[in-house]
Length: 344
Image 1 (cartoon, rainbow, N blue to C red):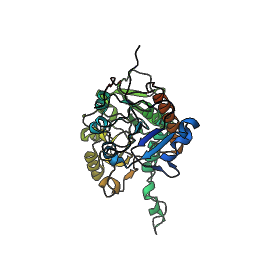
Image 2: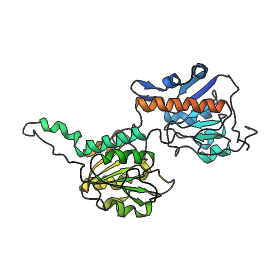
Image 3: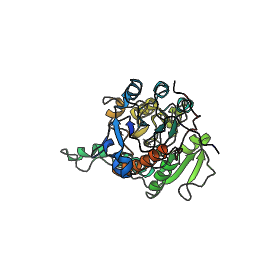
């Protein structure tokens, strides 16, 4: 079988240039440390460059040195950037490829690949952290030290609640397994409800039965992959069938939640709290209403940004670069590019 050839596979032993679309990670970990997790010979000939997430297209279309591999992270990778560049691999540092024009990449002869499942345990922990912060009202905890307020605010237990995980793939499955330890009535929503559930005895519904699954839910965790162009899964109607005071956590993508409807439900008290790591617009403005509300616990799309995940993903990136320079297809491609004979 002929393996599809992407453009611009570097010569054996040649210097390599990897471009990241976001300069910072967090704390003690940064993009300049990525190659520390690679084989020494590969690391020694690789130059790492990072640009602000909003500047990736300008960097690629500006006529500067062309990278061999692009890692967009949270950056958009557009058709113009793909058409006028010469790199042959887009390797995402995680799962999401919704900001990458995969069709344009395929037409340009560029592989696009991701790292499915690698972030699951880290994002699941984060989902539980958001949920517990809401249930235990941790953002309001300091109020209990005010005069006459000792012992407040009152919190709630997850035990016995109806908890629905929307999307039970790698992240949702890991979240469901953590939730099971809290003694909840666990329900899942998935595209194939007949498949083995991630937790024995967990009831599962199809996407077409979403409202039935959500009816009376006390807790909802969104971990579903959005369908491009589709309306939000959790819209005003879906929010309306939840139990009064329900807690909603979104660690999927901003597109799966109708933020305006959720904010309205917070104002009326129908929702008891929102835990958000993703937003329809990213970066979300510092003065945005969802960040300022007292019943919202928000993080800046950091669910997977742990030192453990960074090391695992860095190693997998090194493997991807090694396969690319050897002329081999990625381990987890999301496309199959046609051969390109001319870059003109």
